[in-house]
Image (cartoon, rainbow, N blue to C red; front, side):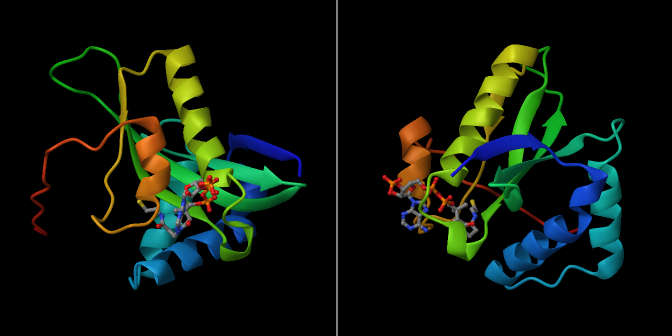
Length: 146
Ligand SMILES: CC(C)(COP(=O)(O)OP(=O)(O)OC[C@H]1O[C@@H](n2cnc3c(N)ncnc32)[C@H](O)[C@@H]1OP(=O)(O)O)[C@@H](O)C(=O)NCCC(=O)NCCS
């Protein structure tokens, strides 16, 4: 399998949409169409802090990593938050998510991000993969919808 990790492009719209739908089904969340549309537009907007890297296996877009670059008070260079990671069901277990994370690490090192971080559910089996990169820390998340 030839696997390429690259920035999302306008021509990926249909493939990205299918992945986004699968991702939201996984989380049993219903994202309003206008938010999906807005997110897609921001992914293509170089001024936006939201970015997407896609995994392309033998020419087919099969997964994504969506990130938000933000500032921090303890560092002067960007911090990368990996917000969404998804690989279509039939392509799982082939190391694609591993490659997406490795690509973010390589990109961050080359352009000078200070940190990469992400959250996951306590019981997400993908933690087997995440533990390959770094141990989980002891922080817990507090989140309020406003
Ligand atoms: C999590 C997810 C992105 C992993 O994608 P993937 O391409 O299948 O992961 P990889 O093949 O790179 O996994 C590599 C390793 O992680 C482990 N792993 C990853 N996902 C796993 C899962 N669902 N169950 C068990 N082990 C898993 C395996 O041990 C695997 O090791 P191996 O290569 O030695 O077998 C994919 O399962 C997915 O999209 N899940 C639904 C959405 C989700 O949970 N996203 C992450 C939210 S934080």
